[in-house]
Length: 329
Image (cartoon, rainbow, N blue to C red; front, side, top):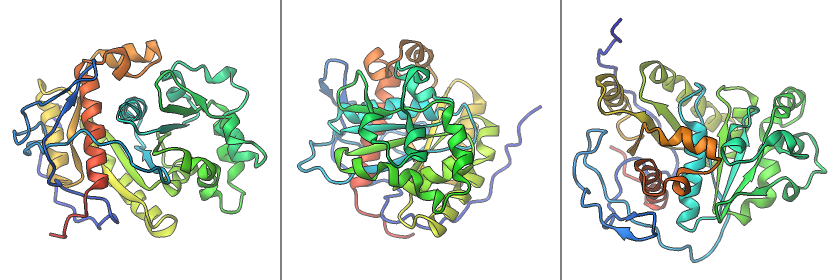
């Protein structure tokens, strides 16, 4: 059966606060290879996989001062779209660029913890303890990773019980925000890996976050749920967290050799022309290997296409976050 490829109507979306949605004017791009050397790719201005000219995203300068961490939720109610992989590798790339980063495993499956080489089942304390026990010190729960500047707040199956216990709590949607408040000044970026649902845990993550990244597998059925997710983001922004912004939609598992992947990506860009990141994460066998190795692709295969993709995503994300807002069209 052939997937329906009829044009989808354009959707007019509200502005998302200060987040730049579009292409900021930026200086020359650069790529950091495995040896830590910056190279010019010579591709700025060329047509990228999204069908748009590729802007230049520079290697970010060191931060002069450290403020309150920018908190980003990695969210999609569909499983298997690359949320955990993107959280790990984007976090590692941000740390590589000098941004002290905390990864929050907010999925009872604990895949983020496993992907960083940590067995969550042997840990005495996890994010579950922070949600249900006010006496728990978050410093006792956070664990360092093998990547310098990258820490982890682990999770395991106990988190599923916490979701049920929170139902009767007053201000239950703000529980994660309260738990993270004491360490926001210790980091530059906090990335939250959400579970594949739109339940109370995901609402907690969206209420705590400043922005949302939506990983989207380049597959037809993954595309169908994007409108529902963006509607949920709008509702959380209106009712619980007025500062919540859409950082962008990230195309993952892209294989340019298949017509289906190209068609799906074209439809996403057609419907959400300003929200889709220029960076596209290609499908590669390296990603499953990194899960087994328990480390990010930026250290496991530092010169691979996947590592380069997440470094470019980190630069694009920081460029969008730092650039002034784009005028309404």
